[in-house]
Image (cartoon, rainbow, N blue to C red; front, side, top):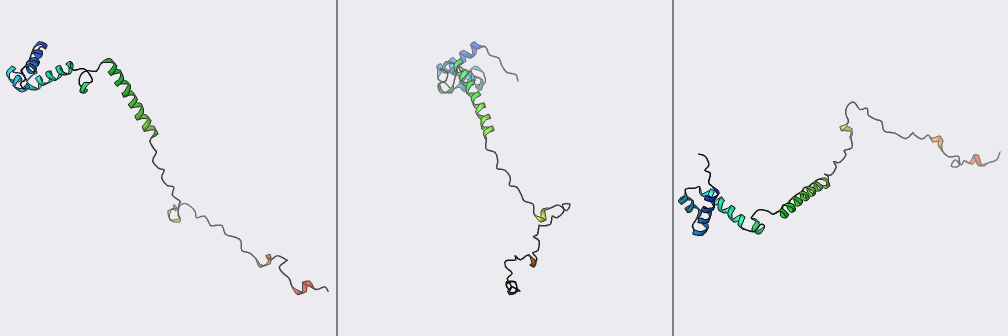
Length: 137
């Protein structure tokens, strides 16, 4: 089944019949032999064209409203880009310190530095006081 083409005059007369008679769209559509959804769309378009734009969100936009809409959409795009750029970065992953068990087998084990053992002869001469050192011969 193809779509039927109706003239503008027929559509206007059908809409006028719906609005003047106060009957339901489905009953008028049945009487005229048109699809009720088609008639419903014609009525909606007629009402939208007749209402002042901006009232109730219906009706076509005028030039000033189109420019404002364009400007606001551009502003939204810019703000979304700024938000994406300035979004907080995820916290950095903590650095892990390698342990003896985490070393690979190829790495040689580094010996820990140790202090040289002290010898007993490193005593200071001041601390060694013997009675023979204090006597005169």
